[in-house]
Structures are given as C-alpha cells and as structure tokens.
Image (cartoon, rainbow, N blue to C red; front, side, top):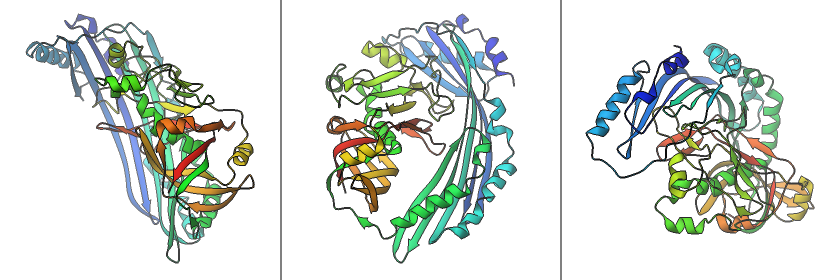
Amino acid sequence: MDIRNILDRLDLKKFPCLFVDVRIERTQSSGIGFQNGELIGATERPVLGAFIRIHHHGAWYYCSTTAVTNLNAEIEKLIDQADNSKKSSNTYDVPGNNGTHHLINKAAQAFSNISLETKVKMCETYLPLIQKIANLQDSTVRYTDLYKEKFYKSSVGTEFSYDFNQAGFAFSATLKKDSDLFADSFRKYATDFKEFSGMEKDILAYYTEAQRFLGAETVVPGKYKVVLSPEITGVFTHESFGHKSEADFMMGDPEATKEWKLGSMIGSSCLSIVDTGVHENTSGYCPIDDEGTLAQRNYLIKDGVLSGRLHSTHTANVLEEKPTGNARAMNFEFEPIVRMTSTYIEGGKTPFKELLKQAEGGVYFYNFKHGTGGSTFTIAPTRAYRIKNGELAEPVKVAVLSGSVFETLKLIEACGDDFELHNSAFGGCGKMEQSPLPVADGGPSILINGMQIS
C-alpha cells in the first residue's frame, strides 16, 4: 500500500474545523523466546493503522482506525461528533507550518526483511553456551525487533515521514552455588542484523565475571560516595529528572510551576541534562514528533540551572513556552502526550580513574534491574563493586540506592569523560496507559557525594 499517495490525495484544509492532523503507522515486529534451550515462542506481527484528531468547538476529538483508505469519512464522523457535543471555551493556538520532511532511509536494513526462521537460527547458535557457563540453574534467550514507518500530515501543511528500525538480543541466566543465587542478563542492541553474530566470547566473559557475585557480601546500609556507570547515570537521569521535566505534570498545579521555576539553580554547576530525538540508530530516535514538531536539542539543566522542560503544543500554549518535539504516542491507537526521547547528562572531563580516587571507600554501580522516579527515586542495581585504593575491588550486593531528586542533583561532584548513550529494544518508558515507548538515556560516569544505599 502506497501510504504517501494516500496522504497526498487527502485534502485536510477542506474540513470545517480549526485543526486536523493524521498519523499513519505501518509496523512489523517479531519476538522469539527460548527457556533452558527449548523454543517457547516465535511470532511475527504486522500492523497498519491511523490516528486522527481534530480541534473543533474548543475541544479535541480523536479516533484510531485500521481503515486507512477511508480517512475522509473518519474525519467527517469526528466533525459530526463535535457538532453534536457541548461547545467548549478552550482555545488552541494552531501551530505553524513546519514544512515537509521525508526521512525514510532504513528500509535496506529493516529487520522485517529477514525471515523469522533466520532469526530463530541466530538465537540457536548461542544455546550451546548453556553448557559452558558454570553454576547455571536457569537460562533464557530472547530476541525482539521492530521496523516502523510513520507518516503525518496536518491542515496547516506540515508533512513528514520517517522510519525506525531496532532489535535486541538477551541471554539471561540465574546462577546458583549452594543456597546463593545471582541473576543477570547480557544484552545487545542493534540496528543491523549482522551485529548479532560472533557474541560468544562476550557472553562467556560476562558470565565469568558474574560468578564473582555468588557469595558476595551484602552492603551495610548507609550513605556512601558513589560512582555511577554511564548505564546507571542514564536510568538515574530518566527516572529522577526526566519525568519531572515533562510539562504536563505541571498543568493545573501552580505549586509545581513555582517549585520548578526556570532560571533556578537546582544542581551542581558541572551538571547539564539534555533531551533530544535527533540521534539516529538509537532507541530514542524521534526526528519529528507526533504533532509535526521538529526535534531539537533541549537543555533541561544547563550548568546546574533549570533551563527548560519538555512540551507538546498544548502544554507549550498553556505555559507560554515553545513546543520541544516531545509529543509522542506509543502507536497509532493513542493520542500524543509529553514523553522523553533520548535523555542524558552531558559528558565532562574527569577520567574514570580520577572519579574512583575521589570516591575512596564508596561503591561503584555497573548495571541495574529497574528504577522508579518522582520527587524521590530508587534504582535496584544488579552489579556493584567496592572502591578501594582508587580501584574497583570486590563485588558487593546492594538491594537499592535511593534519594531526593533536589538533594542528589546538587551532590554531583564530577562528570566523567566516558559518555555513552544506552539503548534498549526490550521494554521502554511507561506513562499513563502508554507503555512501552522506545527511549534512550545515558551520560558519563558520575561521582555523587552521598547516596542512601541499602
């Protein structure tokens, strides 16, 4: 089906409403799972659908449909619904024409071009490693991918199309020695299927290191100096501050607006946090949002100063700021809401070894199981190490590290020179009923002078 042609023939300016836009998405995804060497599932799922919204008589009206060749009739139904509903006094500042942008360029590497059988065989090449990992109790091998083409057109003239291509591989294992258990997962993110070849040595090395955590001591609860790896820095940034930067949480809450006043010094002077969808070949890639706003480099914090927040056109209107390219929907079934893209702390100049020296007697956190955010945040780490004599020492078991967002941002003493952006094809960000949405996060290793560990 030629979706570009469908939109070219769609005259949105003829409809008698303030604003109308249409988003069409065509996706194909696949998923494969092995449990202890046995195939438990292998699926493919193609989906095609459209999301339509109009602003009429002071209110928004939405619908989603798989009848993408019948969009005129769907728009007319929404207008009839608005005409027969109670009128509202709400206003909406119609966005300007953001131009035409056609960016579909990943079709040659699309994972939808590769047969499900080929993907299953790739996973099977790693099953013999189960016999080579010591103390193995349980294992899973998982693979997931997604190729999406997105098309958009609005009544003000904005048009875009772009494609998104990603896949993930995970070799997860639970190790057991006597009564001690340790679970961890080797993961690989890729935008080209060739990148899933030749991972055997890396997987075996990963689980050789994992053996050290069997019998590791449990940390004594308390406050410690900590160094977070780029991966942990990313989840800290996402959970502790990224969600607080989404402007819709301020709607109707003057106290939140006062607390998060732009221009306030809220973090260490070495701290700068950015959100942007411009990074190709990442899980946070979003060059144009689902309202037709181009991605830009949004400083949320610049040198410790609160510098911006993430917006849709609606939240920007209400707070009298500018849209940032962060109105995103999980898929065509949902309306766009304010969401992150790639959110990270900018890299600094401090070498990693110097961070360890400054954190003497503290703890280094390497990777994590999960995290939660808000005014306070928690991160459940997987691997952590004591820091002794300026070096990483023995592994230590930690249940959770936590803190207040405002306090912790001011306790960041140094940012490393080892910036990394971390991606995942498994899961994603959850907000309201829309989960999981692909995002990326990251940063450098960072030194924090005092975090609660238990």
